[in-house]
Image (tube, rainbow, N blue to C red; front, side, top):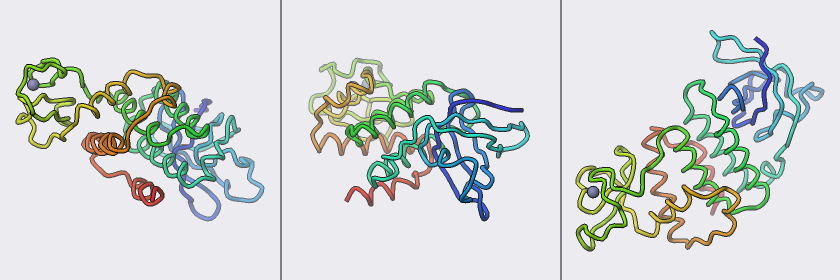
Length: 255
Ligand SMILES: [Zn+2]
C-alpha cells in the first residue's frame, strides 16, 4: 500500500553498500522503519532529504507482514542541518531520536508526539537551552506514552504534596513504579523511589504545564538542573528498561 505523510528522521544506519535503514516518526502512521535503496550513491534520487533529523514529506510502500518498509520518495520540508553541524545539538538530537525509537513500541500514531518532536527540534535549532528543552521533552514524552508522573498529590495517601501536615523534615520522593510523588510519610511504599527536593518537584510541576515556547525565559540553578536530570533519568529508565545508548555520546560531548 502506498502511504504518504510528513516524517522526521530519528535514526539512521548504513545498510549494505549503498543503502540506509531509517527510523521515521511520522505524523500519521507513528514509528516507521524503512529502507532507502541506493541513498548513499552520489546521484541518489533522494538527495539530502533523508539525513538525520530532517523533516520531510515521505512516500513509502507498506506491507503489514513486514517490519521494514520501503522508501519511495522523499522531499525536504526543513533540513535541521544546524543540528548535524554542532556536536552538542547533534548529541541531544540523537538522544531525543533514540527515546522515540525505543520508547514507542507499537504502531500507534500520535500527532501530539510528532508535534512535540518537531517543536523540540525547532528550539534546538533556534538556540534555546538544550538541556531544559530535553527535560521538557522527557516529561511530555512520558505523558504521551501514558506514564505521566503524578506530582501534585502523594500517589499513596492522595494528600496534597505541598501539605505541611506530614512529618517535618521528611524527604519527598519520586516513585517510578507507582507513577508519581510520595510524601515523607509514605516513602516506605517504594524503597527504590528517588529522593526529590521541593525545588526540583516544583520545577517538574512547572515544566509539565508550560508551552515549549516559554522555555527561554526560565532560569534554573545548576543544582536543580542536575537533580531534575537524574530524577527523570531514573523515571525514564524504569519505562525504557534499558539505558539509551546515545546518553554516553551525550555525556562525552558535554565535557
Ligand atoms: Zn503519602
